[in-house]
Image (cartoon, rainbow, N blue to C red; front, side, top):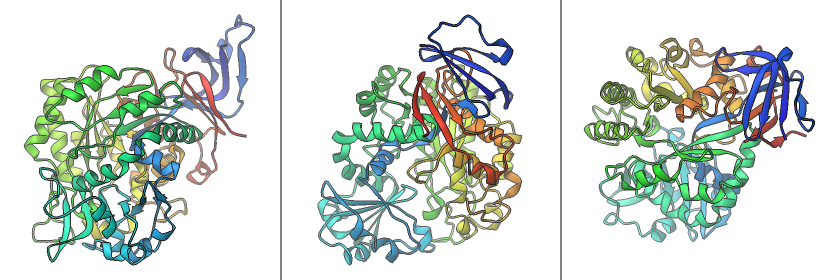
Length: 533
C-alpha cells in the first residue's frame, strides 16, 4: 500500500526551509514529492492519504554518536543512573541499585564534581555495600569506581593489570583505591557487562522503540575504547535483531593495527539496516580527569607542565588514519583537547591530499570541546564532518573555567564559528553519557545554549548560538553525512522512507517554545513505528 503524506510544512534539507506539499511512499522508499498543486491524481485506490495539516514533516532524526549497548542496558534496568555532587552522595545510592547477574552497576558520577584531582575510593562504597560487587561507571564513560568485592571478583591486583593500553589504576600506598581511568577502566567494564549479551537482543529492540518515540530512525554506534580487548560494539547483536529492528545501525569498531577482523565486518555488514560505517579511535580523554590533550597547561595542573596526554602515540594515530582511509574506511576520532583537535585535523588534511575517500564518504572528529580559535580554518575540509553533542555544552558548565581557564572556556563548543568556516555539523547525544536527551533537546541546547531551566542566563558563549534550521539539519542531513549515508537524512525521491512528524513547524519558534514540541509520529522503512496518542 502506498502512503501519500501531505503537510503545510515539509522540511527541505537543501534550502533549510519548509514548503507546503506531499511525499509519496511506496514500499520503503520515497518515490515522489512536490508542492500541493503537483499531487498525483491517478494514484491506486488503496493509497493511504494522510494530511497532517500544520504538523511538520522532517527526515527521520539521526543520533550520530551513541554507545548503544550501554544505553540499551540502562534502558532495560541492568544499569542504574546515579547522580550527586559528592562521593558520599553517590555511594549512598548503592543500596538501592538492584543486583543483576551478581552485580550492582550504576552510571552517572563525575569526578570533577568532587573537586580537582579528587577521585572516589572503594572505602566509601564499602561502607554501604561490602559483600556484593559494585561497579559505578563515570558519566563520561572514561572511568569506573569499584568496591573491594568487585576488585576481588575481577581478580585485580597491581600485578594483573592489563599492559600495553592507556589509562591508570589509581594507587595509594601501593594499594588499589578502586578508581580506574581510560582504557584500563573499559577493560574491566567490558568484562563485567559481557554477561548481559545473551539477553541483549530483547534490550536492543525495546530501546529502539524508545528511540522511535524521540523521532530517531538511525544511530551511529561508536566504540567506547580504542585500545581495550573489547570496544563494546557488537555487530552480531544487530544481526540477531535486524528482521524486527525499527532503527538503522551504522557501527564503528575500534581501528586496530591488525585489520583482519575489521575487513570481515566491512564485507559482511552492508545492509540498509546494519552497516559498518568505518572505524573509531581515541586521541585523548576528557578534561575532568586531565586526560584531554591540551596545547598549554591545565588551569589547575596536577603537576608542572600538565597538558593531559594523547591516549595513542601521535605517530601511531597518523598511521591508523592513513591506514583506514587507504582502505576507504571513514575514520572517527575522539578529540576533546585543543592539541588533539589540531593534530587530528592536520592528519586528516594530509590523508585527504594523498588518498581521498570515495565520494559520499566522510571522516569525522568527535566532540571538539576545547577549540583553539586559531585552528578554526582547519575545519573547512570537504570530506570532514564535525560530530558534536549540544548537550555536552551544559554538562558541568559551572566548572569549565576551573578545568581549562577562562580564556579557553570562552572558546569551547564554537558551533556558530564552525558553520562560518564552512564546516558540516552532525549532532548526536553520546548516550549514555547523557540520559534521555532527545534530538529536540539537542536542538534546543544548540539554539539557546542554556539548560531547560534557562541557566546560564543569556546562554553559555551566546555568540555561538545556532538557528533552528541549522540545528535541525545537523540532526538529519548533517548526521547522515557523518555516517557516510546518502539514502537517509533527507526527504528526496529515492531515499529510504524514514520520516518524523512533529506537532508543529519548529523553524520560527523561540527556544522556550521548542521545549513544548512533541513527536507526533515516526515512520521507519515506510511503516509507522510510533504514533502519539
